Image (tube, rainbow, N blue to C red):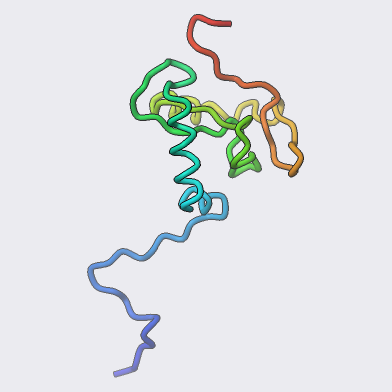
Length: 119
C-alpha cells in the first residue's frame, strides 16, 4: 500500500477550502468588515428605494474590473433586492461612465443612484 503524504490526503467529511480570487480577498478582511459596518451605520437607507432592512454596500464600479475598494465615491448602500437588480444590469455602460482616481482605480463620474420620484 503506497504512503500518501499528509498534505495530499483527503479529509473525510470536510469540503475543500475555497480559494478566493484576488478581488474577493479584501471582502473577507477584518478591515473591510469594520469599514462596511461603520459605513452602513452612517447610511441607514437604500439609495434607490429607501428600505432600511438587509442593507449591503455596493460598488458602483465593481472591484473585479478595477473599481476602487475603499473610495466612498464608488460606494452606495443598497438593499439586497436593489443590489441584485443593479448587479444584473451593471456591465452595460460601466466604462462609459467612469474615470480613474489618484490610485489608478475606476470610480464613477457621477452617482447613478437616485431616490424614486427624484430626478
